[in-house]
Amino acid sequence: MLQVNQLSVSYAAPILHEVSLKIVPGEFVCMIGKSGCGKSTLLGKICDEVSGIVRTKSLAFVTQEDLLLDWRTALQNVLLPIELKGRVTKDAVIQAKKLLELVELQDSLHKLPSELSGGMRQRVTLARGLLQDSDLYLFDEPFSALDFDLRIQLGKVLREFIVSNRKAALFVTHNIEEAIALSDRVLVIGGRPGRIVHEEKITFTETKRNPVAIRAEPDFAESFATLWNSLSL
Image (tube, rainbow, N blue to C red; front, side):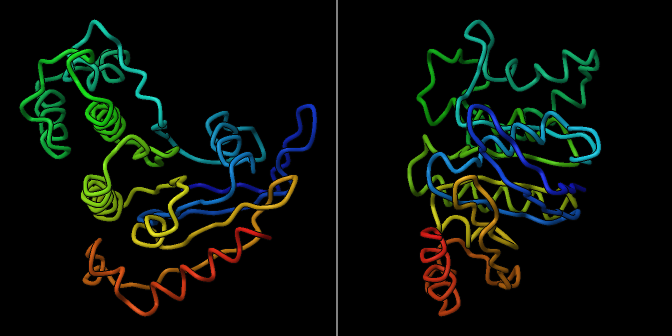
């Protein structure tokens, strides 16, 4: 679904050095690292689809900024990418409403962004990204404006969506617990310039993916300690 081969990025100074990664359909990969290590730069370069370096199919990018249009309702904002492609159908509207219900905004379909809290606006953005039905989803800290309990709940929803629909996800977070609970693999970006300094495979079966109970598993604590130590590399 996604393959990045020895990607290096420099602006005024080197940002990323020979980053290579691969994500297959149905796989959820999280990426952690200290601020300024190049995580968002990597996502941006993937969006650019640099010929010969980054190969992927269609993608959707969900950022930590909601980027909603103030004059459009929640439902209209979710439908915007579909509308821009000229294919808003009755089925698309039904699906948009289902996604807004999935993120618990079924009572806010016709509210403007000014009538929504920051967390609600972010959930609209998440629903908009999922409606695009892409092969690859990039998430740049999409839960940063959400309360802890809602992060856990939406994380479960998001993982189930990616896995059950055989999509692929690359999810940036600063939360190690969230990364372990969500992902099949966790990549740690470190150093200057940034590079992948550690890859942690997460082997919990789907039956153990309860977002709360999984935190009590012995393997969870072991992965947490390994990833925490890797952040200093």
